[in-house]
Image (cartoon, rainbow over the protein chains, first blue to last red):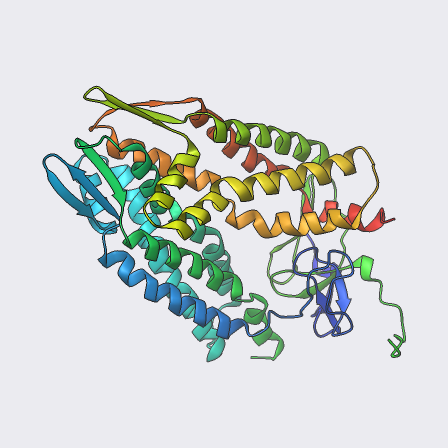
Length: 210
Length: 212
């Protein structure tokens, strides 16, 4: 553990330094725009972090609506055609007795996306209006959203595998539905949204003495 | 650069927290331990024993598993006398054939291209470091790309999707898992081993100090 003895008592920005986001090399503020070590562009804070976060979040949210309304999977069989949305897929899984797997899909496709929308919007609002919230709590929330977002892609891969596998002609055929397009877009854009939010902004409030 | 600094800043002895920007002197830590930010507790860096050797081994194994996963059949099913067998790439092809080409391409990147490229870059950098072949600037670019690709390489998420699909069709037909299924499992194991073994800060230190 680093003790307070090792800390300089100020941020890199206050010391006139900027940290490369990829390799961690320190640079003089505004002296270099490209990292001398790895070549990435060096910025003290991600530029327009909040605007980008909101833009990506809103697109993600907009895509999430058709993702839930339109079918993600079309099943054609001799006994008739059915289509599944995200929720009806979860329900039919649960009814067939696979409660645990239904729960996994529900968490990946519903709980994680909705939680991400709420958490990212909350964090962005808290930064915008400078709410008095614990920095540590917000830091943890931000780390969680960055880690869990990618797991929402499960449903996309399920549809892809089933559509490839279940091609039994007239007996049973599964095809991907348009909803899965919107869902994949939603996941990708909320991932962009989470990475656009610069966690250092959370702590800058402390440095301003708030 | 006319504005010469009044005092030389000891860049190599300082480290800033990636999460809150708090500046620290690099604490000297023992192998196998980690240094955390004094303000937010986020990891500053780690020192892992035999990091290069172990990462190299895991990345090489991962590359082999990935090659097997992509070339062998991984699921087959039979129902009413009809049987079909698919490879990982067929799942991507199913999206492509249903007029969802961008989604097919994106899945191809997430399941196959990005994991392969990331493992290959890691193997190359680790090999050169391990056998002291000298530091090239392209190795730093490779490490930066490997870092960037990490969240978008989703082979393990694909695997969970496969297991869910298995459960979904288990009452419709008889399913058999092929060899690629097991090598995908191996790939997930080696990918998590890489995240355990890889000590990014040590690699960057090596890439800094051994510069040509």
